[in-house]
Image: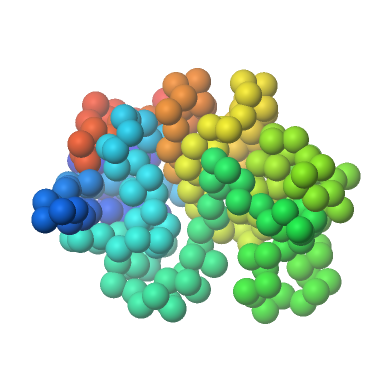
Length: 241
């Protein structure tokens, strides 16, 4: 269950309290997030919507340990990440977070297999174990027959499937999706969202997603809206039926 009122239990998978993020530009202090509370349980699928500049991507970056808050705490699976050193955060991200971006971020000179394998090179898995993990992930996203293809040989939808395989190959605790369908046509976007929905329903993945597309947001169990750094118009802790 998702809660934004600060009454969620500390046992939530993701436990955020009093989260603030501000920047200084030209001597002016800009508050991107202000006093945000959020609890997300394992297996939840949450969509964040809101106008540009409302803090959606900043929130995802903070939850993924890519940025540091100005105030407040973020606890994920019992780890309080807001005061971790940079080196510990790198290891924590490798274990716990799968990132899916709008622009895929695939390396053009690497095959689909090699792109998906990249996160596993930071682990202690053997070459044969890495191969098994990569093949399983690519089969799951429907690209078992495209392992040796390079990004230029794939459609946009297929590239995003490779990116999803890369995000799940290490079996992370949760997935962070920043406009995962923003560069796709409607048909490809629907196929990607069907895949993300399967990851939640069939594999119990926890997904937090930023989107501008209402049709995409409807696929989530809960949609939260960010405006001027605060969560507004949020449901009363209840997921969609």
